[in-house]
Length: 373
Image (cartoon, rainbow, N blue to C red; front, side, top):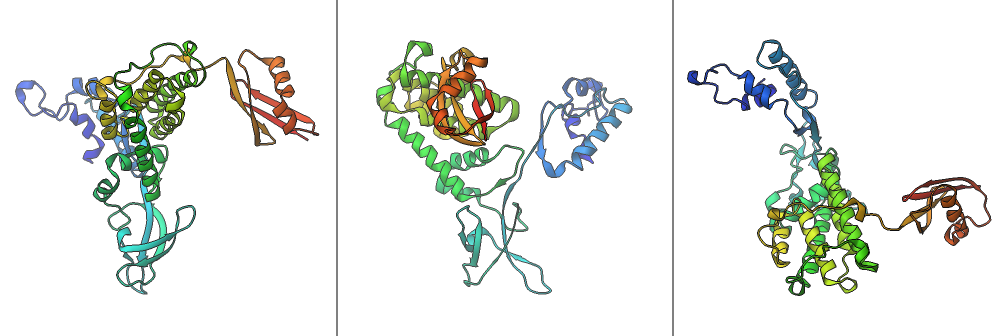
């Protein structure tokens, strides 16, 4: 019952002193000031009980005069669960005996699914149950400290955040953690190998038009990635999207092809963007790059929308649903002129050779879809 109104009580926890003039459980003035809760985060398993009861309680509190706010929460995020296979043995007439993952030797298929399991204690087979949310009773849990000792806290955190959107379940995979660990090692090497020559260099602060080639592409990429990361985190808590964008930016940072100030811009931006997901390594890398204070003190990077789009756009060309190539066209093209340019491009001619275009759909700056017959 208490979980259905505790958030209101938090707003006036000291309502026990008569000299405050609010000896009742709730102080209407303060409850109305703080509620509804701006963002409420909880597991989906509470959706049909606790969260439903909370709304009933709030309306009841309103009816009896403790508040004028009829809804307890402005926004709700139900985060997914962390899940894993269950491993057990079962004897007729007895309850299942569950095994911890480190008590079992497993074989996995190409997709990482467990296909065979044997107990380390006796070498006998162990049954593989369905993937369920981690729980102590079914022993399908992983010791976080063991992962931290082997891969580091940042690797474990990055895997959980990057695997799926926050509202979906995460299927636990040590291969996934290893992948996150490899990425962070790659980032570490990228920064530390070039930190000495970049430490005294100021990040490029000019416009994309002021440079050319790979340098210009990186400047535009930096602005685009900052925008996408900002939108992902602020609108949807989509840490997975932000991590994916950071990895994309990492792929663009080729030291041999970039001027030092452009490389410094890319690396310092990358470290600031990744810091919420991997704070420990990013703090170290920020110092390696000559950053003053902590990386959090540097703040979130800004972007300029006008710097994102270049004069040309690359279009994937889909023919009957399959990508058959990519073409680069001027962003100034539109309407019939854009269609004519697409049809006249050699890549398109080759992709539809000997066939008739039944339908042509172009999303400007995005994609070309062609249906042929």
